[in-house]
Amino acid sequence: MFYWWMKHVFLGPLLRVFFRPRIEGAEHIPATGGVLLASNHLAVSDSFFLPLMIDRRVTFPAKMEYFTAPGVKGAVKRWFFTGVGQIPIDRSGGSASQAALETGVRLLREGKVMGIYPEGTRSPDGRLFKGKTGVARIALEAGVPVVPVAMFGTDKANPIGSKMWRPYPIRIKVGPPMDFSRYEGLQGDRFVERSITDEVMYALMELSGQEYVDVYAAKAKEFGVEDARELDRLPRSEAG
Image (cartoon, rainbow, N blue to C red; front, side, top):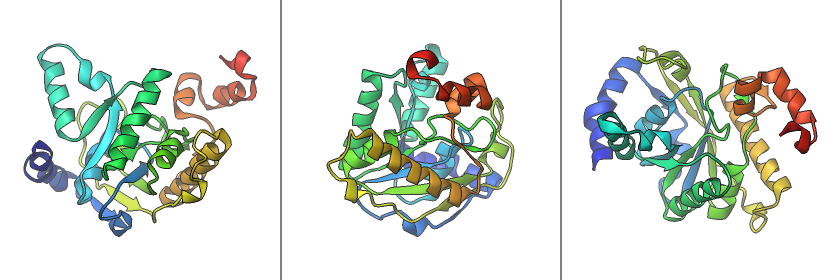
């Protein structure tokens, strides 16, 4: 209920007035059944504009920090992010990452719509970075189509580090569903998962027109693009 009120009464109308969002290709999103929306990731506001512009409710995984902050401010954050359809995800790796994947699979098997950012984090410079294979694992486990989505303008409305959003026209472009049922039963095969992920990233590159960088965004943020490329060339034991 809170999700509906935020979308149609409180937050949604304000976003429409100040950012004039529009969407192309919304008909590509199946009207029923589980579907995984795989989007490029330019800004935090991506998770607000995409749910606003499609009819079905969208659930996004969000970093655990949004739900665990102390005090009144933390409680307000927790209430808000829960209300707008986000679920906490522990990104620390290992069993925590597995739990996040299982949560996504469960939601999709229940026939819900889940949004995911294959890059794993926001692009540091507006380019499209290498996708993580979680998108492939979830799609194969849940047996659902992947619908590519390109966001435009959210990085101008909500630049990295900004505390206030700036009015800027937002555009969303949705591509045709991608069916990976030909790989049924091959979940866990890292070569298959890499192939699927690269196919999704290619679709996003075509849809968004972004330059593609074959480096993980998180590593690029930490080391810079060129240093990250050098690290990727090292044996795993040397690269850490």
